[in-house]
Image (cartoon, rainbow over all chains, first blue to last red; front, side, top):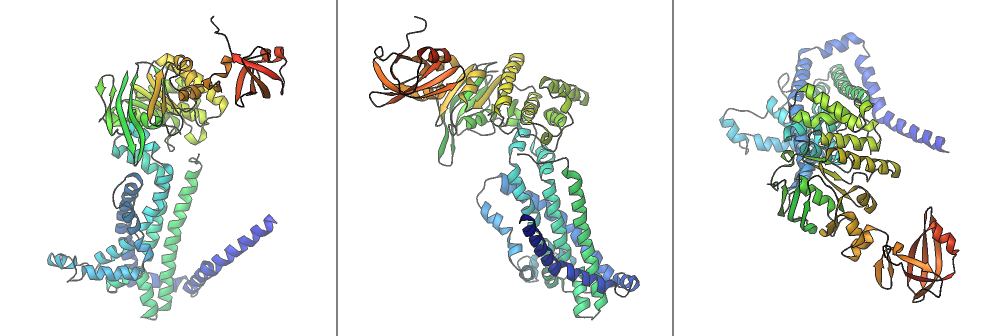
Length: 272
Length: 315
């Protein structure tokens, strides 16, 4: 009985994953490489594709570390301190998940346009947010903000304060406690959160589209390039090729995480 | 180092965790704070350590007012209920932590860690991780880690609470020995009266955030200040409306006792037996007898017996 139901459940899950992810990705690979590696490669290495890839990676390189630091800080604040407005802060961090990215994009446009609250003073100092990489970074940071916090918070709560208090009674200061005790105990959660943030950052489309102005070669990230190739330039192969590159990068990030995790798991078996 | 607690009060939200507690803990003593759960004993320990700050009152260690000193500067060794091992560090690194914080030379740290590990009998486990240790080993590691900084005071929160009975008894014995070697003033929190009686030379009994009685264990056992202390510190039963120890009662033939009753159950626990008697006034009491007394009297359930207080043993 048990084995039958286990197999049935497995089949359902695999079928589900297959229909949702496996088949579409397979088609993508087939379509991108259908004409051989040569055409794929020349699509991927053409200047606009490369500049889109470069911009996406640059945005990730800036947005991910900032969000990681903010996420860790906010998680510590929420898990370890009592203050008025804690629940509000906790909930605010879910806003980017709850609302559509396009709304975030439009809100950013309103705030940073030449007549917006932040836009007006910034324009005076010659800082341009909209239709520039800066705007893309802001939009990307907004939509990928919650992932580190949401990965860490349950772990911080579960690990508890005992180890930190023990370190304190042994004479350690705040910085040492964070660096030698807290951070090591949440490092997998941090890495997991960072991985999700990278994936979200590289993949963000809606919010970025609104603030970037979609200027080819200047403010076009890889997802926007893919969409542009598909929708505007009818360059289907370019679109497939870009999509495959983006998918491979994300899968690579996940694979690295999985490998690291496996290596470390043997040493740190959890105990009650 | 002596500890002096004066009028300590700590509230959490609406509950009084600790209320107007004053106590003196003598230099070199091994004191147990004893009380049922929720009596405020763990909070009191955290107030001594500085991990919690009192709303009112003062904590003085060795004549120095420590009330507002951060725990990191109090020179206390604190062992947590679940040991709080640094899970990502091996045993040696756990023990070395406090010394590294104090920036001692590496050679000195290595030597001291070696000494401590042999003191707590964990020589072979230096490179093990906490997850690879048994409960008792984790407890000993936590002790070594706390002792590494040569604390003025050692504080232990329910040190044996999470261990099985055999390991528990062993560790208890070992802790008492260790205390005999080191003479560091030690305060431990427990809800287990037997543990407290066995290990400690001073008791502080707490109930509902207040100290009910303190003093040496035997004195408290012999002359408890309240019925609560009486019941909490050892076996007790009610006889003629008074709380009394069941080993202070005896069973005699039915015409000799002032109070008569019928035996309703006999439980043999090796060397001792617990005999429950339903008295003629409808109340019930129990009497603790030795195995020999039980067999000599030929007691059995439903037998009518007399119950009376034992004559003074000394008299």
